[in-house]
Length: 616
Image (cartoon, rainbow, N blue to C red; front, side):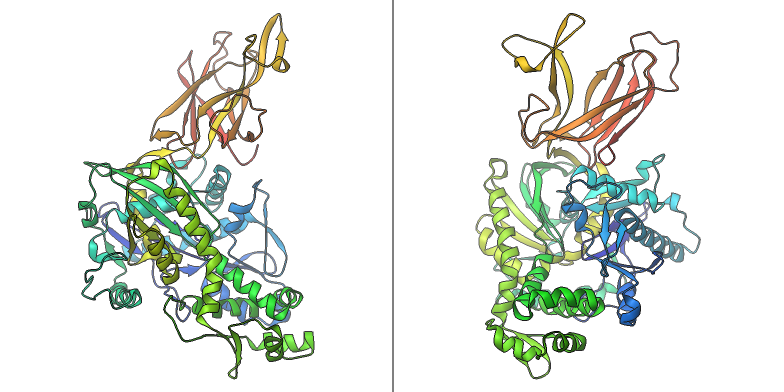
């Protein structure tokens, strides 16, 4: 069962190991919004005033909305909280999230509640389908995270899943962390030509000619999906898709995953005959998701009505603010490059009412006075935005995505890219499609899978069935530890000299495990041996350092940060071992998470080892 825990919306999908090509996407959700397809549910969560879990998704939003304002200010409502894991520099198990009413709750609790909700929904659906109770032990869970997330955020997700009861530290392989653009890549690899829209082709696709704008292709695509939605089961042919028949050994393609919070991209190369994938350039990206568009809309409102009012309104009428953003969301989805008629956004009655109380004049007056071009007041009580005004809200975010992509295209590892797959919820935006097509269409074919918002979910299920499909990855950072080396005159700086029992040592030497951008194969290990300082020592704790630079000599250099610890637990091993023990440590960097194991060389017994990027 894969869970796509997104910034703006989430969902799950599953398949039974006995029929892996059959991927079932979760049941339709109750509640839905006009103009938004509901295969996924909003990532919103509501806690009672006593801080107990109440509801998730549309249910949380609607319940919160229906509360009386006097009551709602005691309830804790959270949305778009996943970004906190990306933006917090020093993430710990204690990091807080702020609810709409300004109260703080531990992030770990919120994430665990959300995952527990999905766990229960999925098990219930599996039990209903199988006619008997499905146990958690019968499921391998896959949770997707952005590829650009650092180690601590991935570990945080794993801890939250343990807290939700999906897996446990004793049984960690029951949960796999999958990287979003990788999952998308695995799915795109299986695409048949009728399952996507090729923005660059000039021939009729799906029986409509390109002169009907892209938009209609999408409507047809959506119709097609809608007809098939009742079954909600997608067949993934076991043959490698047709698009693949055009890809030869060694061909390269880019997957750009553009979601609500982040955009991240990965460059893959195909290795035949099995069609394994090799990562050519480390995952890159940034916080350029569609939230940027919401943020621009908020800035526009501040410009028209004043920042002081908007801040107050969000705190005093949080449910109405949520309503306003929902109204904006459906208009945001209607924005298109060739649109000529204006987009109307309904202002909630309490917005109009509260504004009048706050300022002593009407919303209409504010709009006239603000001289913001392109935004007018319509007599029906709506903000009327011209298409240009709407497109301007998209511009900063889309420019950042195009800019970032250009930089990736300029890297020497990224020459001769054949295809660019645009996936993720934001990829549904015709404005983003057009920008990417016009910037890169001459370099490669730009392709969009038809059910683009579900691409990651389905790819994550495929990844759970065969996690070894991606054989080679690139390390995003240089990792190593600090060690003492024999001091060499002329090679080592004098200030690093340490004399101990007559031996001259050089301190703070960076012993590199792996370099940034280095290729690492799945299962490849980095081996080091460590000896306890004194025989009675029961725990060895080794600090792990990381840097974005390749050539690091000392752990004291600028840009080198302590990022975690490796902890070897020597208790419970024989007392009769030789006085000089040697512990061999093997670390794996080729997977989606960094893993470690250790062995006592004298007895070949395994030693308990923990590698921790969150609590050190």
